[in-house]
Image (cartoon, rainbow, N blue to C red; front, side):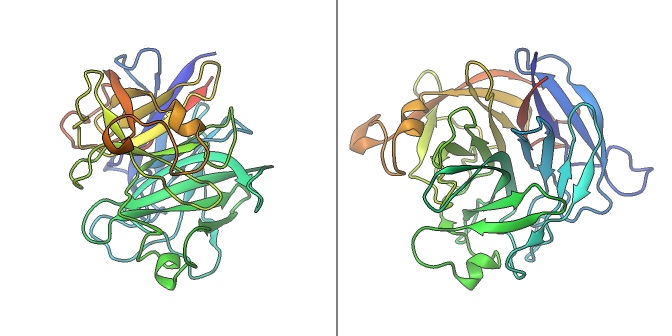
Length: 324
């Protein structure tokens, strides 16, 4: 068995064909600098806001699904949700448009991350049901923040907002014009399915343009709440300064590792988060500095040489890991 990372480009690679053709690539986690393999192309002609930034591996089937972003760049209106299944090897994509619950639900934000995990009961215990979680965020302006959603795996399934903390959900949060986690932007999501628990999940923000540095957040999968940030540092202890959109994934196989993938193709391994993930509650964790500040270390493993990534002509933001 070999661990492979998967990602999807965000630009049309076959302009002569109808619609936009988005390429899907995979690369060995053990050798991120090696030439990636093109797995197939997704015809995005019927996918609104077709930037497929959220990638997750179904823990029940081992297959990869992708989620589109909530809004196209510059748009003020959220579009419908599209889930594209089976974009891994063997490549056999099939699209579904989950039904919003309630019917006026719209997702917040412009960037998207996703991962599969267990659904949690009201008592906070994992059930046997697998769902696809989607974190959707906006990293700029006074309306920066993130909201968490869950999508059932039926076809087409349903999508609902995960918001069980603080005041009751407002119409603006339900309709995607305000975040349930204001000021906490994230665009990558990784769920620990080896040790399932309602707070055994992390979201990532490698953007520094929003003024709060590169960081992780612990995620409560029952309530949708993000924790106080866990700042990311280089191995030498300096603040990580890369300013890029990100994907996040656990290996969830054998010796568990947490990896981040940036739109440029850079792959980082994150360590030092373990105490934070194991701590109960969202405000708890190990103290790593003045005023109880919390930190994790991001180490660059290599850069996948994806077509047009270095120039920025094509961004690769979605990321998941499959054991094949």
